[in-house]
Image (tube, rainbow, N blue to C red):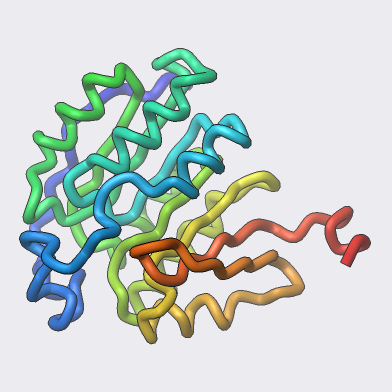
Length: 209
C-alpha cells in the first residue's frame, strides 16, 4: 500500500503540556541542549538493520529526521523509505520540516499535537516500524503513553530508542518495562546522557540468556 505525501494534521495544543517547565524554559533556542540534531546511534542502527520505516516522537527542527532518512536511503530507493513524525511544531513550523523531508524524496507524514492524543489514534492505521525514536514529553504519563503506543508498532526486529532516560518520569517508565518480554539496554551517549534501546525478546535470545 502506497503512502501519500501529505500535509501535517494541525491540532492546536498547549505546548506547556509537552515540555516540563524546567525543560520548556530553554527549548525555544535549544540553549544547553547539545543533543538536538543527528544522533549517531540511530544512524548506525538504521544502516546495520536496513531500516525503511522510521517513527520519531519529538521532531523539533527536522534535522534528525532528515539525517535518519538520508542514512536509510543508502540502501533503499526514496519511495521505499517512510518517515512518520509527531510534534507540536511550535518552535519550528511543520512546513519547514516538510521542506527538509521533501528534499530527500521519501514518503512521509507529520502529525501535529499532543501525543497523548495523536499517537494512540494514529497507531490504529500505522504500519509496523523498523526504528522508533521517543523524544517527547518527559513526564511519566507522557513517556508511558508514548511507549505503550510505540510498542504496538514493533515487529521482531524493531529497535525503540528512548531519549533522556535521566529524566525521572522517563526513567521510571523504562524501569517498568517487563524484562521477560523485552530486552532493555541503557547506554550513555556523549553530550546526551542516558538512552535506552528496547527490543522484543525473541525465543532464541531467551534460550541464550
